[in-house]
Length: 239
Image 1 (cartoon, rainbow, N blue to C red):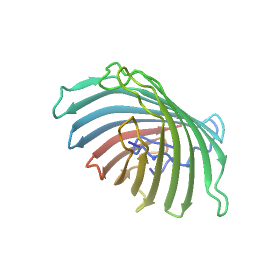
Image 2: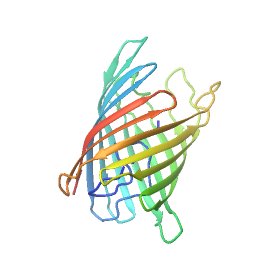
Image 3: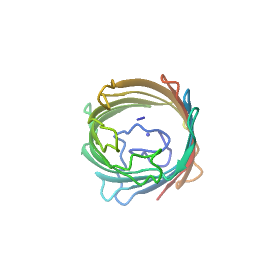
Image 4: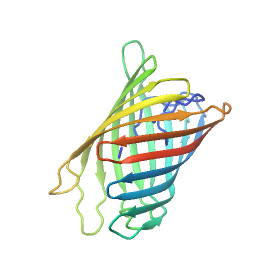
């Protein structure tokens, strides 16, 4: 539902995880491209997706993030499989306050989901919009972040989706130079009339290798309290 310690460049969000942090790229002109293959499995079925993340920093306080899903396949247990192009997210983030002394960093972000999915079993065909504030602080190898998000979701035919408040608290701890442990607590208010809000906790590990200052392969595995297991393997390219 609801990002990793790479040796080359710390980034604001990455494909190894979904939680966003205040570790935004600080160098003007920095470009990061990531590709990842994601596998998911829970009690209701399986899914696989090929994701891409393109991050660009036009200044040391602003970051642009484009996240298209070029292909995904959903394999539910009791329904026919569905595959095709997924939706695309575009996010603009601004460092409102850098971490100084005992004060945490604060990042403001706005996100739009572009309905590029070509299969209605994968995407709603409607645009979504959200705004969030992320606050985070690093304590040595420990990185703590809290994101509060308000989202409005386009309703497909026959459904009436409600606006939601979404929260994510995440922690990241570097166990070694290449291995890190992460955990998240996340939840949301009611997504539709007659449905309750939900919450969950996940934990996982990520391993990354610095081939050189431009290329970093990574792998991550996580499991949450909804019995969802997610594994990702990918490459990060930095310029």
